[in-house]
Image 1: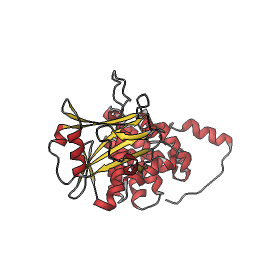
Image 2: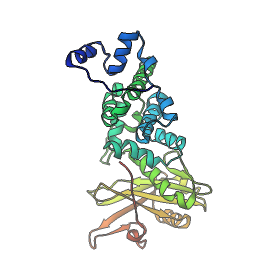
Image 3: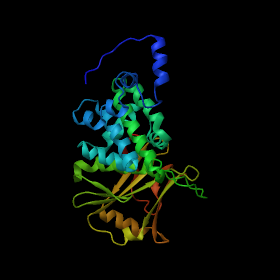
Image 4: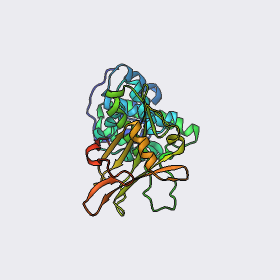
Length: 312
């Protein structure tokens, strides 16, 4: 439906506001109700129709698709991102870029927006950035809120906000870890082909599995540590690789070390076992300020480390 821009005075605008349903109506929908006695649902353009006809920017359409997958289908944000990426035949990192960098938000901030009842914060951000698509944005959020109220349950992304536990270890951010593993998969795609994330730790390519383990930087001891469970190291295959992903010392960037199957097995043999896990320790040695794997000091960490970029 073709649309036009008109000017109205303050009195008319005040009257329209009085008749509007907050967070649902636009001036256009209020006028339709008053003039033609029609409902909001019958006026607004359906998001799926606009998206399928390519009428809106990809930054908006893919962001709305992720929101829809999280709220309507109760997927986690990383899972929703993968679904949208596959649907649009693009990389997961490209979709993350749409709702993070292009909106000026980190992934953790997006998670908080997705948890907000009614999603009013997310709605305001999108309306501000894409005012031309106000009607379709309002329509989608209105429909999502209706479905959510009918189901009587909140947006289900709580798996990324685990209850605090008594520990001196840094709290895990599983959403960040998932994003880093997806980023690594994209990085290795040229070498191994398409991939999928199996469980929380494995990147599965055609004929190759990469076990991904993440460690934050522990400033108090200037070290990183990873644990590899017995189910992995005891059944290690010649085609399996090990990726040690780490938060860098600046706490604002990330790196990874990719070990071949033989290198990983050698490391497992050198490491001690505790509660079925092989413990891998890496730290900065104070005598020469060099980073080494404690169990394999001959391994050149500096040479083998590669930067890992992720929109976060």
